[in-house]
Figure 1 (cartoon, rainbow, N blue to C red):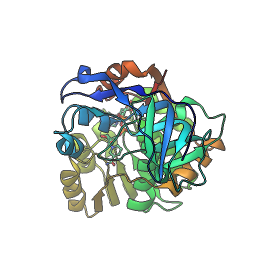
Figure 2 (figure 1 turned 180 degrees about the horizontal axis):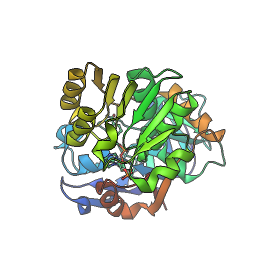
Figure 3 (figure 1 turned 30 degrees about the vertical axis):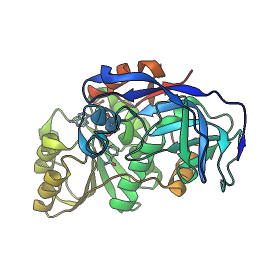
Figure 4 (figure 1 turned 120 degrees about the vertical axis):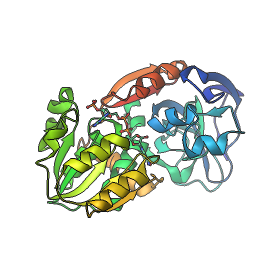
Length: 323
Ligand SMILES: NC(=O)c1ccc[n+]([C@@H]2O[C@H](COP(=O)([O-])OP(=O)(O)OC[C@H]3O[C@@H](n4cnc5c(N)ncnc54)[C@H](OP(=O)(O)O)[C@@H]3O)[C@@H](O)[C@H]2O)c1
């Protein structure tokens, strides 16, 4: 193992009990040495995802499985510099800048000044990457896997993307367009110009259900809203071949509605995938993918970031900046 000089402890923002945003509190953690295949990162930034917020509120599988392990450092998306490596780590080395979806789903740990990660979850990025890149891993992998693994999207097909302006949606729009598909984006009117600029062919405001009626011959419906709103939209539209619904809690109901329309349907859970993350980083570094980071706040203000995500109206991502 090789190391540079490191502190004994570091600050992190942890879920101390399940409840409102202010249950996220600053904690001190001791710095451990990386084990075999592990990499210690001095974090530069992390990003906030809806799953962090749901877990903090006590909802979903991650909260259930961690109920007796609080305080739990939140967050999955981490960007920073490698400061120590365990045995068998290669080719990453100290000094490299990396990004990754770490500890997904049960461990988490990205809302922290130092992050321990499995090397398989990390991808080396350019030395001149910026803090915004922390917005990429979880949302980007969800978009990629939802469209191309679960959704089997082909070039020249038509995909409808709901919550198209959100963290996953704005990346999904760009990946689908880059792949050669026609994208119909669902978002509030304030986001229409941005989505057209990202390559969407059509935009629909979700406030007007009647506008969904003319939609038909859809190859893939990529649902990022879930719940009653997604069901109401699906009822209105014509024929759909395939539906992928991303919010896990309502996936059974959405799939049931989709099957009633004669579509194939599935829910999904994102998984770490180094090769896919390498592709996403390459697209970003080649300026073929743009990340819409709407706010960057210091780590101690993580609770404020959670409140903003909870409102459900963010057109993009929030990034937490370390000291
Ligand atoms: N299963 C998995 O592995 C997995 C992975 C990632 C995310 N998820 C889930 O997928 C969902 C989307 O994640 P995200 O990170 O993209 O969320 P997000 O960034 O918080 O999404 C916010 C967006 O939702 C849009 N929105 C709200 N109500 C809408 C409606 N009725 N119709 C269309 N858009 C609506 C807003 O659009 P406007 O700004 O246009 O109003 C906003 O842009 C979340 O429920 C998340 O938990 C699941």
